[in-house]
Length: 334
Image (cartoon, rainbow, N blue to C red; front, side, top):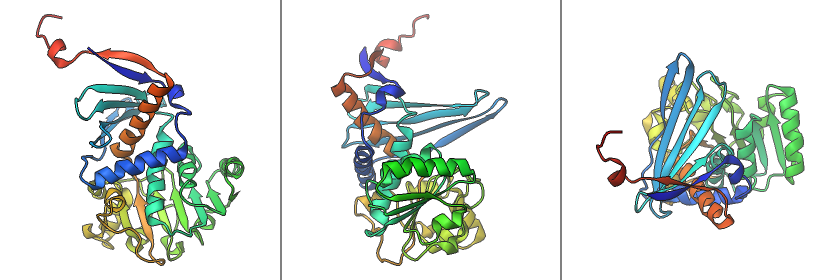
């Protein structure tokens, strides 16, 4: 038998700051850029009751951890459940099982923040945000650790949501945060644009992007999810989290392919290749860049291992036991 640590969502909360998540995830992507294995998500659907089961995995050899994410949504419950199994990359032994709900916006936001740090202009000072849910909050909390924004503009189709978001972040950030009445008002003149929606149609006109703008889009993890229009993809140096994702489930890139405005060679590099210095990031002040964040096991394993180590130090969590196959696979009658 071997012991692993079970961590509830509440026990994870407060173990790390947004900047801590960014540091851990940056290191994970560096390892990916130097060859660490990772695969895009797999998605299984059921119709009656309607629901989705998703999983993705990664191995981070230098961190010494591997694992991923398994979550489901729907199935009559009208909710979602997140589980993160974490294993030792050397021995294969289980290290932890983490309720991944509370860390989700921060580890996903950290991937976006790493991309902003690599691809946005150093002097970026105006942030436009489209979306006001937990993922948008995580993106802004983490991105604000890599750039000093003077102005943040936020849009949601629901007036109350954008007003509440602006009030919350106006207190959290040194920047002037305000709600705007249209997505175009968030995008025009912005140095960095974050889209965190579930949209099936583009949420802004790509012609509105100023030269030198960077876009982080994180709601394009299905062929029918399309936050960005073909113009944005065509104009941009396009960097996905995983190269394989671009033609697998990156909805906006697939739509641009179908429209004939780009081909598969339009993928500039994976984020990890840029972080590791294998491929260049931004090469000019006028370049438009896009990071397509569909979610991977890279940020999940990197963040989960950081939380596991900190929980051990803080004495949080409950030990649970697992039997190795050499003991449990007996072949005896149950």
